[in-house]
Length: 348
Image (tube, rainbow, N blue to C red; front, top):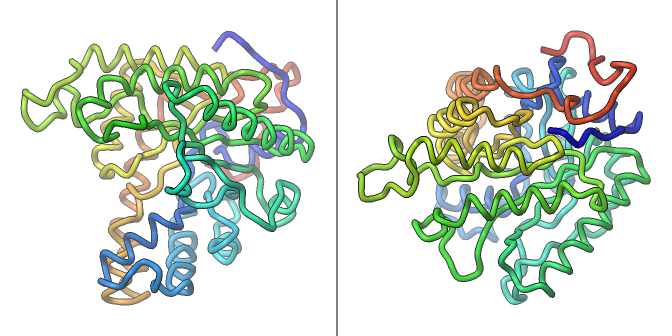
């Protein structure tokens, strides 16, 4: 955290709007579209393409209504989530996704695509305090593939700079020939994550916050692996990987849950804190709310709201309680006036 930067007034306001008053981003993510369809399909037995749009919209609205009192912000998508954005707590900021869900499997390279009919300006006018795009990225990919991705991020970064709103870049690590959940990828994940945050911390991208997975697969960490044969990293090696990825980032970074259980994500944050990683919070999605999909699909809205008030609230609070050692986002920026530390009254 040595390369401090200046921050514009608009971006400062946007980051304050999505962080708590301690400068920590304790945000809830439910911008899932394809992944949410899969969860509904699994719960109902219906084909993914037959899941009613209205059901997903109502689900997002309930999550927003019940859980945003515990969050500093919510990440939604403009396709299914604008109704949910209107139902968030007044203390919660709004991040909106700008990318299309998933990627075209017929095109090599997991190339990103922006939503048609939207721009950063239009998302800001819809109420966004910050803009998020997701990028599948591997430093090991062919140079021509990554060149396309670099240029894409630069264009979005320039658009966010022109509109003076913060740019959150979500990096999803992968390797073309390797199962991302397997042992082989676990060996290269630390280098993949560190090189990714090094690349996208560079000034030409104009990214303000990096949203990243942790640099290890916790299923292969000593003390977390099911059997000793699964261990790829000792606990101290895992700590070293957390520290190395943290040092590689010269922009604020927050962790995503990568679809793991709530308990495992909470334990992961404890390990990150133990390692001294300077993460500035979380944007946690499925680890908070995914088990509510089956409740809603089988028992309806009343039961879902009951589940969210109980288990859902406990899930988000469990994650929030692991953010005590997180680093305020403004520590990465020069702010001689101290104005970055001024957040909305009543935020916690």
